[in-house]
Amino acid sequence: MVTHINFTIRRIIAGIAILLLFIVFPLVVRQPFHVHVMILVFMFGMLGVAWNIMGGYAGMFSFGQAAFFGIGAYTSSYLSIAYGVNPWIGLVAGGCAASLVAAAIGYPCSNLRGHYFAIASIAFAEIVRIVFNNWQMVGAAEGLSLPMQNESFANFLFNSSKLPYYYIMLALLLVSLAVCYFIATSKMGYYFRAIKESHKIAEVLGVNVVLYRLMAIMISAFLSAMAGTFYAQYILYIDPGSVMLLATSIQIVLIAMLGGAGSIMGPVIGAAILIPASEYTRVALGYKGTGVDMLIYGLLITLISMYYPEGVWKLFSRIGRKLT
Amino acid sequence: MSKAICFKVAGLSKRFGGLAANNDIHFFVEEGEIVSVIGPNGAGKSTLFNCVTGFYKPDSGNVFFYGKDITRMRSDKVCKLGIARTFQIVEVISEMTVLENVTTGALLRYRRIKPAMEKAGEILTFTGLYEKRDFLGTELTIADKKRLEVSMALATRPRLLMLDESMAGLNKVELREIIDLIRKIRNEGMTLIIVEHVMEAVMQISDRIVVLNSGKKIMEGTPKEVCSDREVIQAYLGEKYCAFLK
Image (tube, rainbow over all chains, first blue to last red; front, side, top):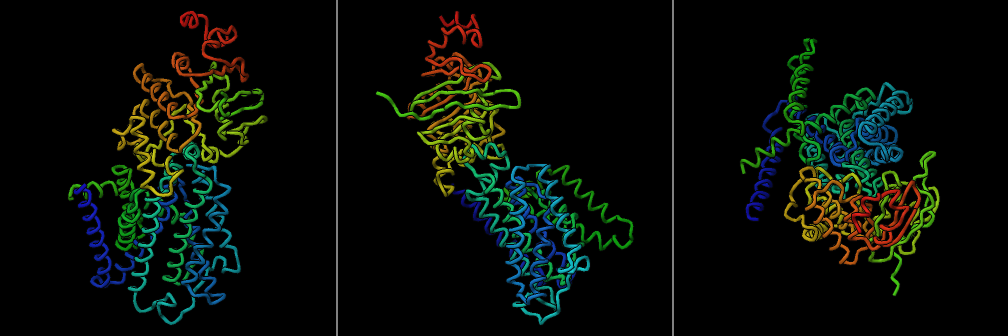
């Protein structure tokens, strides 16, 4: 019991130390590109955590997360451009919009599992992308450009520095981790894991499978959409070709699976490995136009899935246990 | 003294295409009884279980649980009302520990993890799996998996427990243990319906036996009556077995 408490305290201390490291990082490393990569790590970490809630815990392997991401980006941007709605309100509105769409598509898919759910999710996300690509009201294929405004926290807009974006994204990641932790350690998390095993076993234990699956997909969509709003405010330009890509959906799955699906920190570790790997190889080798960067990135994914099929998180927790 | 009717099936029928898997089945179970459903493969025993627990929708007929009509009710609602069941092909949550598996069942009656986990611990002590509480679902033997499945069913706090072939594939010792467990559960006041092929066990523990053949009920009675019924012997038990019993 005493060792157990010690173990917990050490983990909390380690967590705080890592968090402090991330808070100090952009103050020490001032090159904007490194800060940009870290922002992407946090953003994809958040998308991975969101995927993990429905994929890792409830067993719904969605390959359509980009749709929720895009809906979040489009909702806040459109509301801001057309009605001057504050992006912070847009952040929540985007989450709500994505959750509603998620419920509308999730309900008819209530009985789909495994590969079939994955196929349905791809189809759904592609439909959403094609609709936005042709929808004149939201700029169709041209997309939406967010107008320049005075930089301020209230406007969710900063021109002179990436630092505020860095801290906002870090905060959003922490929020999604807190949500995931709460779910994993509550009744909902147990029920999600039962549903992941089989619908039959969940039902026989009295779980309302349709309801709990809807909750998983709606929470996941909400968090993904928040990341989408962040992206829009950060890049200030969105179009279906950048925020609703199948490639993005696949990258989110890779991050979560290779980091460790079904663990709270797994997707963050996945993002911390894959995003820098893809960004730095792209910068170092991508301009040669030979695709070497993609080769290296692909090799890394192959190696991880060969040697750590359950995710790099397993390795980390093993090392952590040895140290403590 | 007559006891309360816990469970009643009235005229239940279920067809799969041209095959009548259940054809106009009637029977009832009194509170505290152990009733076994036996019959050859394909007689409709598992279909019957699936029809009354909401996994199949019966074509006609009614199912009553303490007087309440539960026909075509969704399976999770049936469970909430107090009917728990196990499956012929054992189902446990493989990525969870034994304790977490049972806790998931107990969460039906508790909001928070901690009391549910305490309850799960009590149940595991009762079913004799407490020592293995930290094993993963996948790490258990078939006998322990079946015991775990029963523990999970008990954790939902049922008033009626339905066991679908909990004894198949067990060796003599394991069989002895599961029979003892079923008796122990009954002594706590539980009503049980059992589908089983292991006749020596069925004859020992059942108060009454319902015999199905080709989707129809052909006989109902005490173990003794069933053993001496010509039709049952022909359809299922066989001459040799009954000679052995006598």
